[in-house]
Length: 168
Image (cartoon, rainbow, N blue to C red; front, side, top):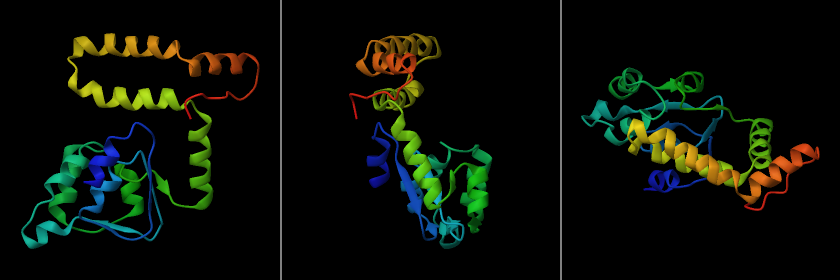
């Protein structure tokens, strides 16, 4: 599925929601790093109104909110606003040109390799035992410190200039 393909990315993804988000559309947006939505957009999971349950959407909702709130959305079937979606963690912010431009500019100023390694760690951590997590993160950090991007970032900081990332 497209949601699964997006979840495999090791880089930020941005969903821009212009129209109402119903049913399976949640599978796409919930895999994105950032979701921006027009203020008039409505969200809903009406499957229960026809005898179906949004099982796959539930799994994705659990990545961004507590289970009682996720279940409420799935069993009520009621539409909700962008404001509520922001409060639940589904939507990051309202979609305005300035918001999008600021977000993209901020992301692209940062080290792509560091961001990619962060995504890799985020995906790997749930599979590790508690006793393995600290060691894994420390090893990943030490490896990253040896990269060209880390060296360039530190050098640029001391030279008071913007870094020139190798892994763009």
